[in-house]
Length: 354
Image 1 (spheres, rainbow, N blue to C red):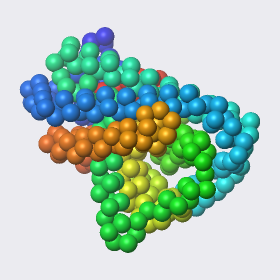
Image 2 (cartoon, helix red, strand yellow):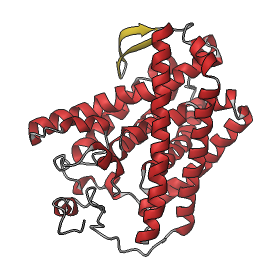
Image 3 (cartoon, helix red, strand yellow):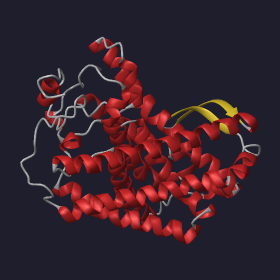
């Protein structure tokens, strides 16, 4: 399909998009030559590879010790509800067979997210070769998520150390009452349920309602799954959801965790809006399950090594973002108020490159 044949190209070109999400045509070519920052581009791809290896190790850890995790489901009661800021509406507590079923579904969802991101990453590499551009290999769910997580870890460590220096260290004593298997169950579920609570509820549902009222869009339900692209309304919702996400860590963790969680919430929200729910779930799961891989598969030293590598790469990626900023994330004045009306399915949203 060429530009003349695609009815969406003109609208996406006017909104400043780099590529048309429907046909993939490059709309607004960037003036800089290919690989203006080849070393930093290489670090971006290296970050994606480290992230991928860590994600696979975590998934294998869950699968190899699934029996112990299922047994742990009989020993704890997991609360399902809505958590907005410091408000805690616990609707249901699940244990036993019900929790086991939810755990299996959560592992399956996280496995799908990981392998879907891997497929998009490989497609981006191939597309980058064909178009002589670095963007497709950088701006896909895996590379973007890996970069966002590494930056989150780097900035988060600094904030946690600062909070500790000021006498407000994050409180982790609540973990002492649980076994490794029990903590693993809770950490596995957090990657899915916290994204549903904090991204879908606080960003997706408002966008859905606005699309119905403002656009009369019959396919507005797709906003729940993210990947609709940055716009002014979404940017405001990302900030609000990040603040509430940070405050939700106050109970249990204390104030020392809140700034770190706010930064994480901003990055989770951006990944959800720009790349889709699958990417934000993957980022959250890999962030939470590092300790699980350390307990069961790669050893504590291996988990710490992965953490330090990602933290170091986070500094490099942060520099990259400064020298090559993502206009879709920071160009608030030039953003459309809303994205265009839904004309493609969710997978097309998730696959678009900007």
